[in-house]
Length: 359
Image (cartoon, rainbow, N blue to C red; front, side, top):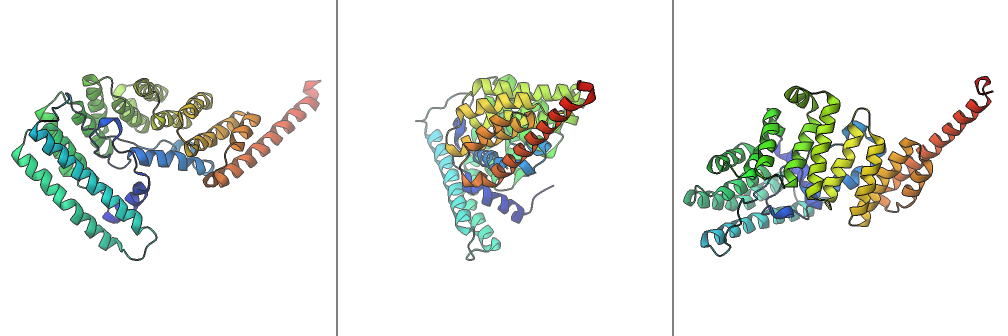
């Protein structure tokens, strides 16, 4: 299924507001398809504000990180490398400018969707032509194919983007980024079993890159039935496999808040929910939160888990530390839930103490 431009635009309007660290892990600044790292942070902290109204199984949100990571570091003084880096800079500049336009259009009556979409296409067109020209002259430039594939995915031309990722894989089968990016595609479009194979191949080539483990973990977690059939294991084993992949990713990125949050959220969706493990995981996430918004978002999670576990005092302590207005509604609902559950627990205990069986 392909999204209409208006649907894509609505998502980008959200994404543009929080897209602030696209150049993570030295991946050459090429963004991820529907869920950039910044959008994931946005969703993690915002979901904390709606956590009491969303079903547990809905917490895990797909995230696929594309990569243009070179196998070997290129020579920055090489003229061709300089041209390539200039092309990447123009790509990033166009994305940043479009993000700015979208931010400015929010709440404004000066821009219709049609006008904005035309303006965006016109801004991206010269970048597209420059990629085409560069690859016409340098058809075996693997990283350019990877970067162009990511650019095309960003501008909603997935089919062409996949062709360039496939070309990169053909040119350099030992480049893990090509396998990772194609796995992302198969995770979206199917067959999802190809994603399992391609992520495993990326990890085989580069077993130290946390992005590959995280993408693999998310795909296994979300497509549990496919994983059960492919690996011939039960659902509990699938959850264990996904969680183990998350832990391997965290081994190589121990301070990654987004990754640690993905791992912690996964415990909501296991059957049954592994609340005690989730409590440990969110406690670890709190230690690496980088600002008050992240910390308070995590405390919302900790308040909820402690409430579910019957740790009412601990739940109140965490919720009491939440002061950001964005969490006010959820905080109030959770505190109400804590009070009601604690009252019910006391009544149950009292009834048990006075029942004939207790005498």
